Length: 205
Image (cartoon, rainbow, N blue to C red; front, side):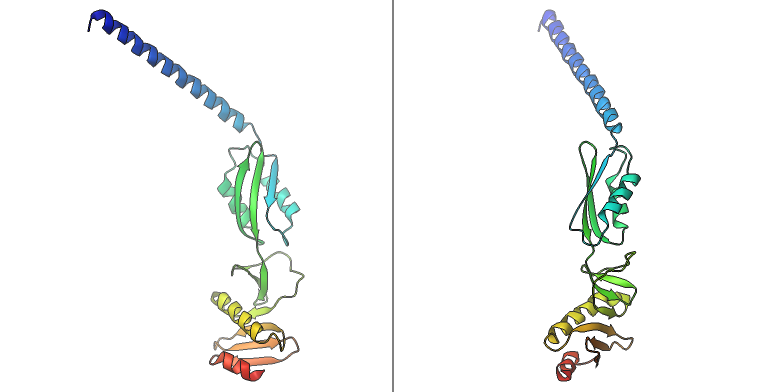
């Protein structure tokens, strides 16, 4: 390779390097400008999605709008979800940003199926929760240990099915002796004990 060819190749390499540096600087400026633009955008809308039957969606939207009025990038979705899930009526939630200024929150609401120990509601998912206001809806009353909520509700369902053509089960209790007690809507109380529960239930009908 001649000296002239070497010089020409070296010049070409320098041109390519200069172009790449220029593109890098331009990209950096563009990224910086975009980041600055995003930081100037405030969250102006909070929207809730979900089948909400008990939750006061309007008040929750207002509360969240006040709490998360920061700019678009500074509001972390983990923080939003944590705040939303702290509400007693919310079983689960997810959040995402919608360009340019909206925070979209999808909510799974609690579905109460029974009153547990007179102080809490038992949700359809099996967890206990305490809403700030009582539910204006007739529900069975269940009693038992906090660690046995699923078992107590499962027995309530079985008892209700077995007695459906006879009476309505309004209360089911599991005592410290592990025995079962059923209260029916016409005032009868059935003491089933802890052994041969279904057999005793059949004989009591």
